[in-house]
Length: 439
Ligand SMILES: Nc1ncnc2c1ncn2[C@@H]1O[C@H](COS(=O)(=O)NC(=O)[C@@H](N)CS)[C@@H](O)[C@H]1O
Image (tube, rainbow, N blue to C red):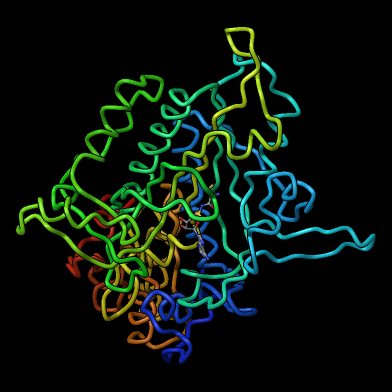
């Protein structure tokens, strides 16, 4: 992509309304624009990151055996009356009326709707286990939306829902999602720690939050230091092997880890001082087992092997792709801007022409641009007439993993400079070697 033809509204100054670094940098890097309290437009650079995050989420949900669907954002209130949550949900629910005066709502979550889908088609345990997920916008009328997309009112959520004959089946489904989450966050360059958590308005009696340790996190968390070194399950993990999956979950739930709501001082006291980690954290995922909480009132049942009807045992599993972008920036930035992990960077390479109009600079940049793109790399080519210093500042701010800098002196000698954004390391190489290294 040529920057001269892109849409990247960089802000030079720190916006006043931003209180935390991720909000500040997302605004300055031209990734989002606030349209109303807690509601944002995603501009080209931000949308590219959001899409990469969702691709990783989707791949790991599919790997774990979940099936993708897409449910509406606007829901009928009748469904929520069946489960009894219409009144319980309170002021966070955005309630609307359609032209026929029917009560509708902007979905904050989809347990009721997915249960309605399930009960309409599945009648026998032979069709279980089943896990349906979607990646869809939600609305929660937070009393104090803040920190940009970290706690917004309209936000993107991957929400998956599992259906099983009994608790044993449901626990195996819960474990598959648990392991899928360990892989998902690791692939984004994040270290997420699963912590026993409160279940809140979703309900149930078994729940884990996946927390990223960060000073600006809204949650106070406590965990054993061992979590920082546990091996994350690899791509060869066999999600069809309940025993293997259960073993991984046991390994990741044995050392102490709890959010403030679930903190147990006595158990915490047993942790050696040197192994205690008490920190702020950002909740990037939250999984729940809640059995028959929705299937019973909504009549979602199957014929069991015993010839009797059973309400299905369910769980739901949420990840916040839009919040994850802020969490990644909180965990990976410096004084010059964002430092994207390669897996979620909006572009792989920032190609910087220090002197547009200089024959050799232009020629080498065009050659590298075409060759990198041909090698399948996403390149943002700064071919603008901004002065070099401003180009370096922009490249550091938007945080692409690699910068390839083409200046007149180097170009005359057939060389370019490569800079690694994370380490700051620079290396001057002949053009062909630069292409070999990054292409
Ligand atoms: N206001 C918000 N802004 C941004 N992301 C949010 C917000 N509220 C929740 N999330 C994200 O959505 C994830 C799931 O939300 S949740 O309430 O914990 N869980 C559910 O809604 C369940 N239905 C899981 S399917 C959270 O872990 C968080 O990453």
